[in-house]
Image (cartoon, rainbow, N blue to C red; front, side, top):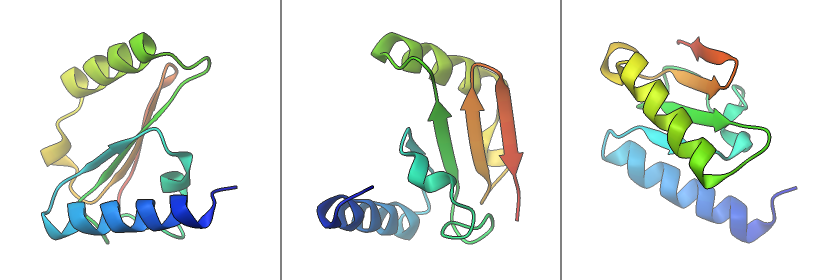
Length: 91
């Protein structure tokens, strides 16, 4: 469970990105909660999910995802990218 400091950090940074109209790219699974971050209410969230986790695996997944998916084509979506593929939730 995320402590108060973690929740404050998440809220503060997400708010700043949204004020700037930028996508959040993260591995924080809390952003997969569609009740808290419904598609269409923000600029977009790209969530990476990997098991096992490693810096190299995240970099490879980010490269493959961004070569395949044009984020500008799915504004406001929650996108979950994993080794199994890409799932897109639109508002």
